Length: 402
Image 1 (cartoon, rainbow, N blue to C red):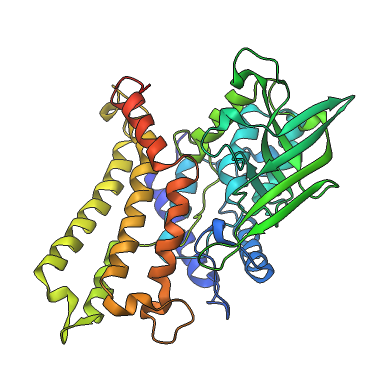
Image 2: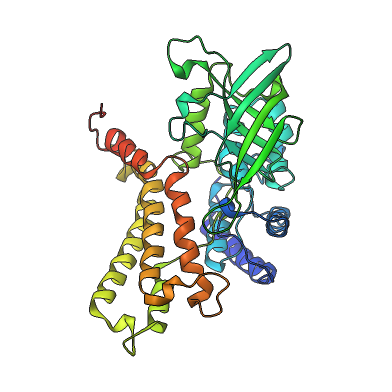
């Protein structure tokens, strides 16, 4: 039986009170803006401890099965808890790939042994996960992955490398797309998908320094790394289908994620408040009618994106194309965030050249840093160009380009 509105309201009050009391104070060091920027031990331990505390309080994985460490409750309860995390601007959950991609995938396609081994440890942040899809010569073309996995008895031997591996320096496991057969009719048929350990001989993550100075990504090298054949999820040669299922979780086309926030929130109203403080020609820039018009456009777009998400929850409103809003969400949200940060920087005039660490930087340089980091969201999980093709073909019904 579904929870009553009274039960949900009481739970919302409970959650609000808990986060109000337990929200950690700002640490003495710079926190990353998302899981893609976690680059120091100090940041990592702070965020992992916070995720563990939220999970132990019962506010993470609430809709995941109880037998694997979840809460076994209705999704509505997790939605309330996640919304409260956003409202109170609490730190994000560092194990994003585990909570939102690997975990849902394992629950959907994994064996009983895999569910028992991984799910609870994903929620508690005991095991951190990263993604191994992109390769140096094959970025968005996942079907052309060349990292080899050669069977040797009850093991596979891995050779090759993956790049842009978020949390690669800290991860215990990687969701890994590898080529097990080079003699197939199509490139997609020779791929297999593994839940592979990272902290074994032959696996070496090398940090990649970003323009911001942060080291959230790695290139991960595999040199005769041996993994058990029980790491395979799905059938050998069926990795392409598993990878496509993973992307539906990453892009939020499919539900089943554990909940929680996965990046520092940003809102158009924060830019409005900054525009009241930033001076140009002796007056706040918000007094410029052109600036006000642009700010209103961002506010309207932000509200529109939120309402569109609500619309996507009502089957009767999306019956013709049930996945249309979900498929376009990643594109619209990531591009809006990038443009908002860029606009915030342009409002600052000459001060836009100041960055994090400069005592005179507006808002500590967060908007400059946010602009640089926003590009990760427009690239990861399929670039904006790829997303436009997907929307054109699968939502608008346009013919596939040659």
